[in-house]
Length: 80
View 1 (cartoon, rainbow, N blue to C red):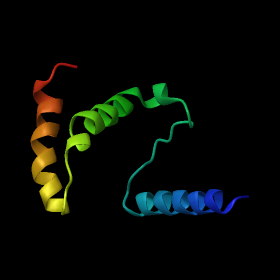
View 2 (tube, rainbow, N blue to C red):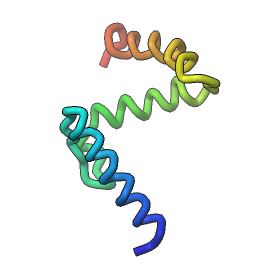
View 3 (cartoon, one colour):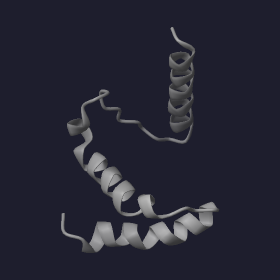
View 4 (cartoon, helix red, strand yellow):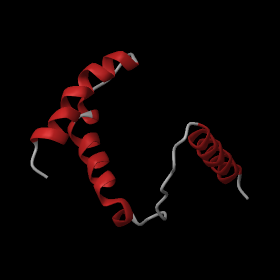
């Protein structure tokens, strides 16, 4: 196993453990099969292309101020 693969595996287990500890269920899709979670993939792609590609955030609160209106528009106003 390559060092990168080992780190990725350790990180994956840590994230799953954290999610379980916080009462979250993780629904994992198979690698390379975005159709298994199409709505999330579409949101992530559009979010990246339309918002993150144009912004640099110095702090988390700054990012939240910029992202919140976009997310509200995407979820409530924009046709899907």
